[in-house]
Length: 343
Image 1 (cartoon, rainbow, N blue to C red):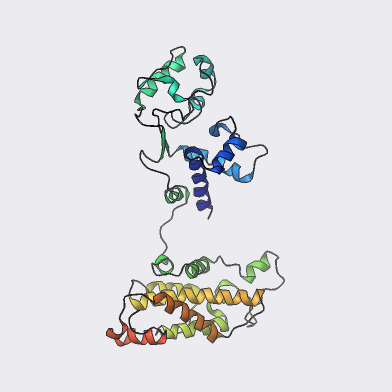
Image 2: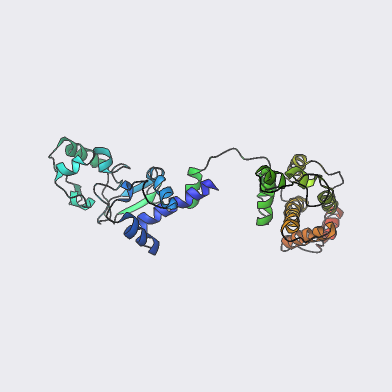
């Protein structure tokens, strides 16, 4: 989530540079004022959100591409059109005094007849005139791109830049398959990562006084206990396994993930059904746990299994599978889950 938030903050930087929305106008009037966005300090009485935006400027600079054209958008001294950096950053403010050009001037001030025309009044200015020769001057308007010329900002690409990448986990297709129910997949993802706020964690944080399982089995609630060591949840999962025509005992949580990963590869009807069934079970077990914790409401295992069946069957509606023409295994699965005919 941290990487995603940073990607969205980069999007706000992009908006500040390229758009004229009400929020952008407000920022320019009240936060940037007559200064350059690139030179604003990160200290002082500014909001946390604005400070986070300012901290990401260096990352944005690495990917912004400025194209100078026939317009007065870019600041001559403070915008990073000069090989990805600003003139004032590279040469300091003394070069501004040496040039005799005002601090607020735009890039167009040093362009004449589509050529760079810097005054040769100091060694720095002579060097600048030499270095800008390989910066093309466009015949169109000033433009900003992301990554390369012609490319707009995409939040997905920004996220890929700032996130810490890692090899795909083995269970990725168990959770994030194309037929998933989003809220179920998210809940399953948290369960696999051990990220649910179970009572043993809350007890460690000092937020509650007891970690006893809310299903009244006498054991402490933990991720592994909830999925599916607890007698209540074990009964639910056993019934779901039976509906999937899986004849085996309930395993420990890591073993369940391993087994389901190995036995749900592909997109055939039984495989998709198993994926949906696991995610729906985890979701409804967690919802029942929360219902008991916060609403003092209780449902029997059969009612939870019915909810699971309804969700899975509803998701399978519209799939191009003619159960009547397939083998007995497929047909029995359809009967068990209340899916008949073409789904």
